[in-house]
Image (cartoon, rainbow, N blue to C red; front, side, top):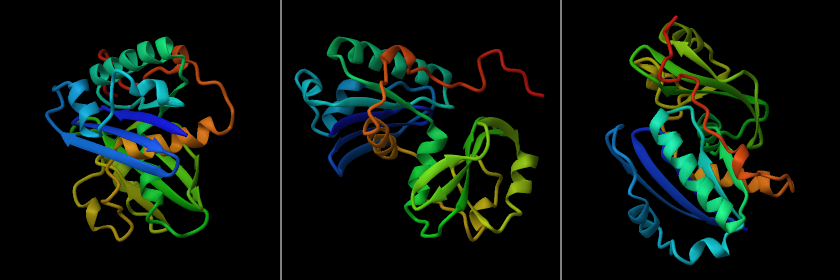
Length: 219
């Protein structure tokens, strides 16, 4: 199975090409307001944007939560390609993708992974997952949490933490997984699992998840 995935949700742009169980990934950090150069991203993994789409079995992208503009641009870009090339388009939560990445460093059964992605200096996007041999199930709804709530979660000792949205000092927690920061690679891996179920993933259903829209008001 060949899958092209993109993660352009904030202060980095990441692209992966998955072929069976091999993944080639390129990630570049940049200012949050910068927008990806698609041709450069394709070239970074040796993907031929003129003929390469014909060899794909599917497309996938990180659908958020994250930068409103970046998510919208990525979704629109891939929807157009998926429609023309008649490819399934799989929208993957960025929180789930980080949990998937984090699970690679966890050997336990029925462990919990809490993921937080920075939204601003006072709030983060959050979700919790149950990890059973790298199979993830969400145990909470995706939400916006303030730092006080995240600090309370860090008092737990029977779970793992990942992502960029935790309060200062979180990296000192013995179960903080600093390696899991997000990229297009876990998005491709999750998308492969989903496509193998035989479900339909129509481009019109692959929409960004914002949680915080431009008119969002803090509580």
